[in-house]
Image 1: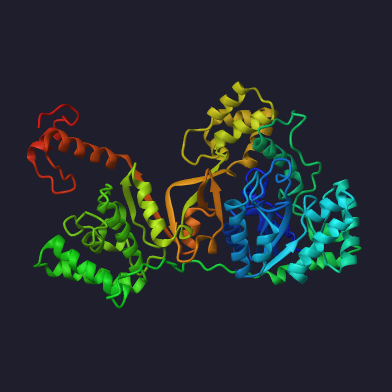
Image 2 (image 1 turned 30 degrees about the vertical axis):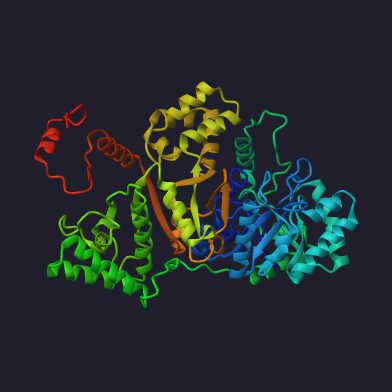
Amino acid sequence: MSKFVHLHIHSEYSLLDGANRIKDIPKRAKELGMDAIAITDHGVMYGAIDFYKSCKKEGIKPIIGCEVYVAPRSRFDKEAGIDNKYYHLILLAKNNQGYKNLSKLVSLGFLDGYYYKPRIDKEILEKYHEGLIVLSACLAGEVNHYLLNGTEEQAKQAALWHKKIFGEDYYIEIQNNGLQEQVLANQKLIKLAKELDIPLVATNDAHYTKKEDAFNHEVLLCIQTGKRLSDQDRMRFETDELYIKSPEEMSDYFSNFPEAIENTVKIAEKCNVEFEFGHTILPNYEVPKEYKTHYDYLKKLCDDGIKERYGENITDEIKQRAEYELSVIQKMGYVDYYLIVWDFIRYAKSQGIPVGPGRGSGAGSILAYSIGITDIDPIKYGLIFERFLNPERVSMPDFDVDFCYERREEVINYVSQKYGHDHVSQIITFGTMSARMVIRDVARVLDVPYIEADNLAKMIPNELHITIKKALEQNPELKNKYETEEETKKLLDIAMGLEGMPRQASTHACGIVITKEPVDTYVPLYVRDNQISTQYIMTTLEELGLLKMDFLGLRTLTVIQDTINLVEKDKGIKVEFDKEMSDPEVYKLWQEGNSVRNIPI
């Protein structure tokens, strides 16, 4: 029997379309005796890094790919009735250059081509083709579309175009998925491949892990489309064959075309993307020309700042602390990090944008205090630097900076202009199907009366990160209903199968990434409501060594600034709230609880 590699899999990150959990895909591949497996989510790469790590953990070779949407004309054309009829195409990264090009293509699908779906076109496919393997895709692929519509010549031209661009890395894809239309398509595809001397590859379009998961996937589709199982016009897949099939199943079905099975292994052997984790990639901060190195400039800022904060006659303790911090920062390669943070905080203050005094472990750095990143004296308050940065710390240090809620965007715009708009991006975050939410969603799809679904959902304890499984252990009433009521058991079993899956993508409230090269060199981009963000979440960006900053919008700073402005306007008094506050009368008022009333000034 020939070996087989699954090359067409949609994970949970296809957002309510794929029901394959990332962590389960390599486990299933291992169970079935496969050495490698691919991820090809529709139009996005949200789960690529998690998939890579999960595969490595299980000893399975990860293949990074995407099932992209290809515009019938230009990606810029967006005419109703024509340009919403896109084609599917499977792209797999052969190497790290292929990953960069895949990332670029997926990004451009959102940045330029979004019309119902994130679409690319043949112009950019040709431009960024290096390092990519292409499969002709499922029934929604261009070649299949023409073949099934009786326009064989157009199918031939489409296949020849891809062969011209991708050469021996273009494959005609045949599938075994229980669809009658696919059987007809396979016959035509096999004939076309032979005529044009294009290799065949056997795949199965897998939207869920095992055959028994088909019903759960159907429920998931209903949740996505707002339908019920009883709706006649709902979207449905006319087969239960869209699962991860074994090499035996695929070899048996395609026994007359063993080369199509063998080519899955050949493709896997070609694909060798490797990600590097823990290696910091900081953007370059331009220092004045009179300084030989970035360290020299930071040291000058530090020396000047120490004198400004502590006076000309500094103690040995302060001097030694500053020298120690500088040596650690230089040794660990975070000189530019300090300069970048210092620069945008300096800008904010120069524009009268209120900035917080500092929070978290970063307040323990005397260097941060001396150059104005923080306004809390670590010596006075006994704060230690090692909590923020030390040679044993694996993860990147992190200054969380508070800005005036209303003017935070000005600082982000400054950073974008300084480093380049394509070097700065906001960061994606995902909402997942929580225990109560998924119970209500599944109940609606199954036509369970609202009052019953609501009562069941309310039996889930109101705890952070609670799961249905934990709730069954904690709530005897819920457990009893689960064990004695068939409909309740069915509902909860489906809900547990879908619980925790990503439901929708949104933008992180404060996270910003700043990169050395354009952001889409490292990660694919996503666009929603004209807001660009990365397709990887904050923790993934940190693992890849990219500079992630939290630009926190704090309403308290806005209120304080408004108060200062009002006091100056009405009383002619300039209040400096961040200076030493030692008026005993003020503390007396607070101690007495008189902090909210009209007090004469």
